Length: 191
Image 1 (cartoon, rainbow, N blue to C red):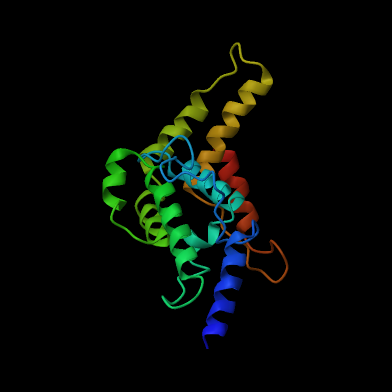
Image 2: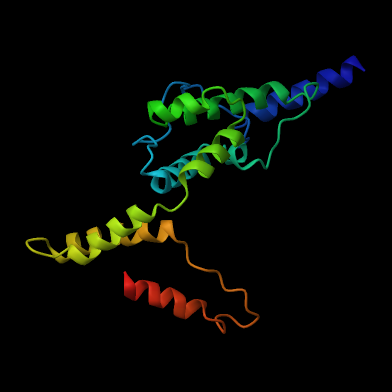
């Protein structure tokens, strides 16, 4: 029995030391470092969350915010490594939000709960921001800007508008026999 436990622990240690494992933490990882910049504030959730997802994906830690690799039982050989990684992700998230937001999540223990809480509170479309963006598109003119710079400014605004109201999804047997394509096209024309 002791030999079997020792073998499981050895396998667990090897797994958490493999760079491909979601339980692997590089020695240079820092608990106090923000994961992304700028930090989350009440106005930038969509761009912030996109940056966090890309960064966590690069660090092979997406499972901690998606819940696809839940906490193992306390007696499982990977429990300690899982806890360490989860705590690291929670710390990254806590340090990647503004101070007022930080105070509301500091006591959460699981990365998935932090992620869901932030998403629930800040991902809702803000109608006044939507109006401001549409007004910005209408009032934007090329002026002295090059075509590339002008188009880049427009693209940034369009992308943010798309985040506030995602396109409907086609569920037809034959693609786009429903009205989804015309709805998307109409939205683009209105913007």
